[in-house]
Length: 276
Image (tube, rainbow, N blue to C red; front, side, top):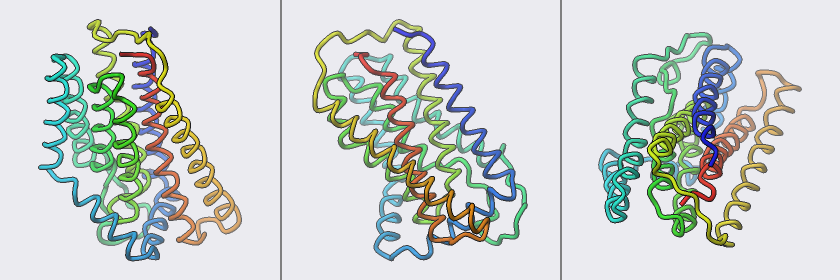
C-alpha cells in the first residue's frame, strides 16, 4: 500500500484551493469573470433556480447533524471506532476550516466596482464543503462491498450541490472549487491518520463490475464537463475579452463547478481503490 498517496493528495488539495483564491479573488480579471457568471445566472429559467434553492435549502444544521449521525452509526455498527472518528472528523473539520477561512482569514479586495452581496467574501463554499465531506466520510466508513451502492446515491447529489450554488447565486465558481480542494485535503489527512494507525487493510477479492461501470461513467462526465467549460470560456474570452457574454460565462462556470466536484470525488475514490 502506497504510504505517500495521502499526504500528496492533501498537499495538492490545499495548493489547488490557494491557487484558485489567488487567481479568482486577488486579480481584477478573476473578479470580473466570476461576477459576470453570477449576473449570467439571472438569465437561467425559474425552474432551474427554484430547484437549486430547494436543494441548497435542504442543507441545514439539522440535516448536517443527521448526516453526522448516519455516518457515525455505520461506523458503530461495524464496530470500527477508528473509522467513525475519522469520518465524523472530516465533516466537522471541513466546516471549522472553511468557516474560519471565509469569515476571518481570507480577504476579498475591492478590485472591481460591485455592490451588495457581490462585495462580500464567500470563499470557500460551506455548502459545497458539506456535500463533499459527507461523500468522503461515507467512502471512509462504508464497507467495501457497499461502497458502489453508496456512490450511486451520494455522488450525484454531492456533485450537483456545487453547481447549484452558482445557479442560486449563493456562491462564485472559485468558492466551490476551493471547497472541493479543502474537503479533499482534509479527507486525505484523515485517511493518512488511519493508515498510520494500521487501520487500512488491502482488499484482495474480485472486482465489482457495477462499480467499475459507475466510475467509468462519472469519469467520462468529468472529462466532458471540464472540456465543455473550457470551450465556453476560452473562445468567448479570447474573442471578446472580459466583455464576453455573461450567459455563456455562467454556463462555463457551471460546467467547471461540476467537473471540479467530480474530479475531487474520483481522486479520493481512486486513493481508496482496493482498500477494504
